[in-house]
Length: 455
Ligand SMILES: Cc1ncc(COP(=O)(O)O)c(C=O)c1O
Image (cartoon, rainbow, N blue to C red; front, side, top):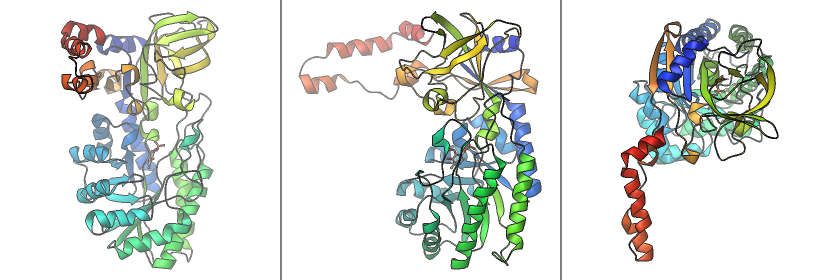
């Protein structure tokens, strides 16, 4: 069941007056309590457990600091994310670098930063050697065990299996570790990430079985002892009202039993039990974010439409994946008349919608709509089509009584600050004085004009 906003409707309205709309809100208290619960449950089942937060889910440094404080490491998928980790003082083996089709340059940067590199293919070993002359002491590979799953509408969230571009298949995994060993690696981990938004405990058991089979085979072939197994991220959240929350203590206990049985057998006799890690993103922050947007126009045509001042640039999951996000009308009376409507944004794209044929309390222009579960893979996926500006991010703490602006609203200057339109460009093509271009330059210098655009 999606969570209600952590503060009453009047406070939501007050925050929107203060920061404007659309506005991305987070509940810092709930994120913290949730991190404690997950780390506590898995830590009990697996001593030394480490959760690496998947930065891509919510790369706001303030949120990252909060999770780091609770004991999380960082899972980075790009050198920009490695940069954030470094800026925040998260170093060495507290950082996992898991990318795919990675360039030699990026592998070199990760090597120099001393983070745990998780290679995605056997040929990445050659790239690593070309980049820095050898593989790092500690190396890991992302296994694609041939299975994958999601319990969301987003079928591209299936990240394992034969249709996936990620990871090393079981039939190449021994060769991958052999090459890494030959090129200097002495310490080893193994990783998988086979699906995002997984709500089924049974699937975890199946996928982990495949991972442990690979551990067994690699050890038998190469005599490798694994220091860690990283089960990846992917624990799902209940986007739909009828979906239950994953019980992480129950899941951790089931996985503990699976590991116990495996290590009690002869398969890995003499091998010290590896540390267990995960790299959840969505589960850590997803339910604790709300995108709040004002209805700016309504329309009764072939259907009833509510047009919000947020758009797909603020939350692309519904438009891109047809994902369900729960929507409420701020402060709507529970006895309000309900009707079917589409909730859409202002983008010139016909997939710019947040809900189709959704039963909602009857609303009007000026009402605030709350889109739930936007704490992960939401703001971070924003883009600038139609010159749309990304919303500010605000963290609520102390039961919502305090609010901290942790990212400003993007502005028009930022949108154009990396563009160039010199007079020489048109002149080089036409030989003529470029009047139109001059006008553009004059217009951008017109402060009043800028202000009215921002508003
Ligand atoms: C390698 C890797 N790890 C972790 C994650 C986080 O997944 P989730 O947010 O579903 O936990 C992703 C998501 O795409 C990923 O690609």
